[in-house]
Length: 448
View 1: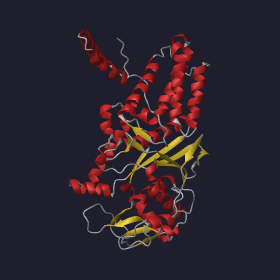
View 2: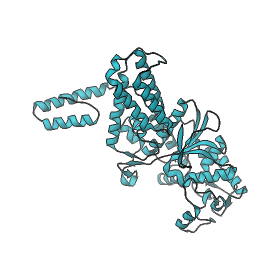
View 3: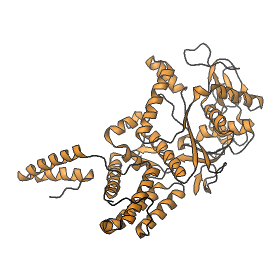
View 4: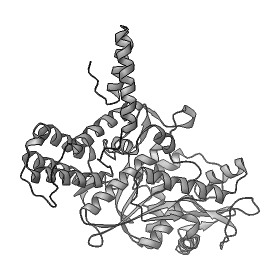
């Protein structure tokens, strides 16, 4: 298996630190609002990656952090009058519910920042003791000048960053030094006691304190969205390698590409911001998962109603094919059926090539196209083997290929068909054809 690491900008042979065990950390949400479809894209991708590793026999310990203390949460608290802690708990619960609806079930531990304040303070103190961090009147900062490899993940150099940074009034020694602890005395917001006075942690230190506590200073894989590479992941490397003296902090860095909506960046100001809850009112969760996995996890993805409808039609084709596989079930069936052998080889070859789910899905359609005309004539052994393969695919992709009960949908289609027939009887062909075309776009074949 080869995976692409952002740090080396190349595909590398995948090797674990501890036999068949993989330690995986993916940056979780800041819980001040409902999760959006961009979150869904990232977490579906990593859920599928974990599923594939487990299918191959690895044991995966997957941690996501929950940022439950942050400027955005505090701002929302001041706007609403609701305590920051209550806001964080509410949206953490809703986030986990949303992930369950998307069948994102692989996270073994959701680690809240506020549950690890002792580890955060301890890591900051060790950075100070080693000369990498310093205290000022308004906080504790990491001194970038003390870590010469800062910028190696994002491929930026300190001189470039300094030349583009506006010099503002600050107590920092260097304008690009970042906060480890923010002093907040006599304020109406969450604070914790520390050796440097009351305050709260900076964003970056939360993650390294959590991963060091559970994984130690070095582990296998760190993931997140492409937008987190700088400054967040860069700061994580800087903190962890400075405090431990060990490099690399992580063997493989994996990042998901951006999700746009109809060609534009998703933004509330553009009125194209879509939460997972809003999405699932209109579309089935399996359809969204299929849509996400139809694009490689590192590539940008463009969300639109048209693309969702196409994913719905494509997934329906697989489900109808799966339903047609009627036979006496044979456990652990073996088969030399050529289209199946080709599909299995292509599917797993694609997944071993940096989790190339679009090519893996293409292998499924290859199997369907090559075998659907002769399914009825195949031996039960062959049909059972095809079903077993698709069951494995369904587990890896996190998608159920069993058709849902469509009784109510069938009744609605019958009603629409009756209305179309009356329109045709009255020679209102244009309106009748328009209804037929729209039903075709939704994946229903209508013939007159």
